Length: 117
Image (cartoon, rainbow, N blue to C red; front, side, top):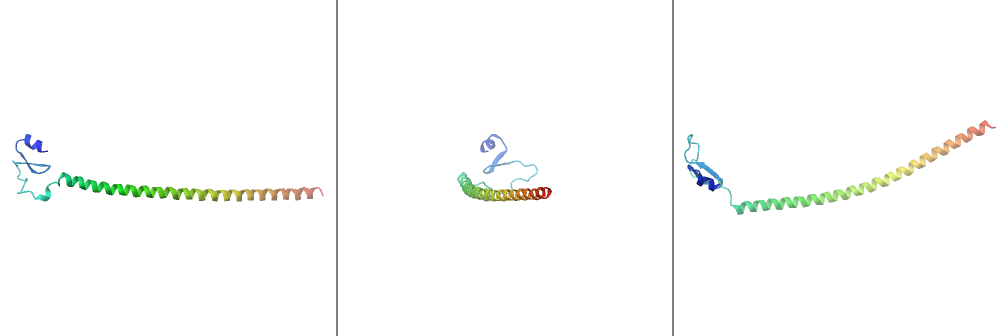
């Protein structure tokens, strides 16, 4: 940005990263010295801020990975439990069908016995 201010006549640097025109037709430019708070922090400060943000994001990603791992374990346990219950239901269904088939054979035997009496 500083290179642009050097190349263009009528422009001056007021603060790091900003350019103000010296001649302002509407007089809405700089009203005096720019306070130090408007200037950008130094490169080291910005890098330190980004590093702290990245540390926070990295910690959050680690927490999310841990939670996903726990969730996978819970889903695995749930699948085992559901498989066991389906096996129980399948066994009971087999018993039910067997009982109905035995009842049907008994009824047919009684009817055939009554017919040949």
